[in-house]
Image 1 (cartoon, helix red, strand yellow):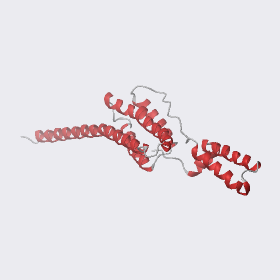
Image 2 (cartoon, helix red, strand yellow; image 1 turned 90 degrees about the vertical axis):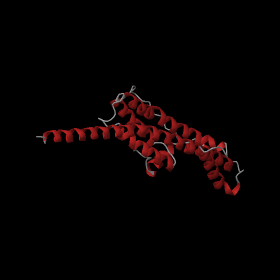
Image 3 (cartoon, helix red, strand yellow; image 1 turned 135 degrees about the horizontal axis):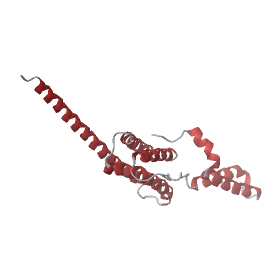
Image 4 (cartoon, one colour; image 1 turned 180 degrees about the vertical axis):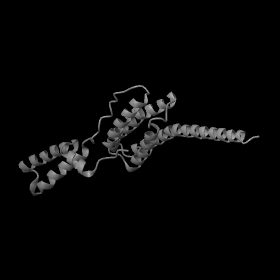
Length: 205
């Protein structure tokens, strides 16, 4: 699974981020106070404090959810959209627990979307819904709610909803994997019986 990019990449993007721009506005206000003589000898602290306040109050960077170009439940199109979903998730900052849950779900989806496994229309629909709707909606809603939750102290943390959603999706996608496993086990059992019975017939008088 694609993961969040490293600190150097995030640092390189920071100058153009909303947080830096909001912080600069606050810092400029601090400079204005210093020039007006109202900040006193501690004006550097005033400028730094207003910059920090602006950066903290600014909404976080929120990547746009993927604009999936394909539709339907064809496997090739679904694999293309899965790659777009991975690129989106790599840009989103998530708690470590949610990132671990996503990694587990990603591994399941990657295995199920490999060519030659899932062909049942119902199962493909479950995977398509997870990739194109459920996962991006869960993550985007979390990112939006997380920022607003600071204004509602004591409310249920948005992380708990995200983790519950990912757990439900893991169970739903896992049911598809379990069905495939059972089908392959049955196929193996049938073939074993066929080979053994054929051998018994060949060993007869």
